[in-house]
Image 1 (tube, rainbow, N blue to C red):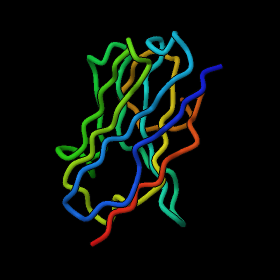
Image 2: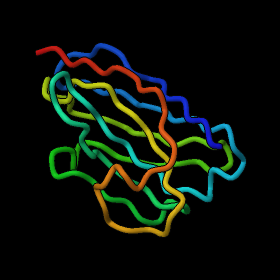
Image 3: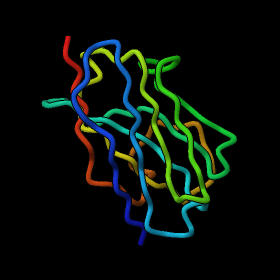
Image 4: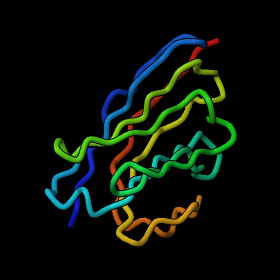
Length: 125
């Protein structure tokens, strides 16, 4: 059982930046691909970014490509989502999730085994 805890959310003006963290309870953190998803009120959960076990492979939604960067530090059992040039439409609850399968370039949330509780990101115009 992997427990994931997100942090770093908050309120920021459009054009600003935030860095989200996803801390894992397990030393087997490096065995999991990590994904970030977001869900805005009244909308379905949406894929944001994904990173492979080693950090060598990454994959982004078109809506965040060039603005967001996913990374991980396996020594700290932590993954990150650096969000720059934030827009009001980025407002959502952001979740990290862990996937123990092989690497694929996928946006499918059903492949993830473990989820965090989410952190709120609000971007004002």
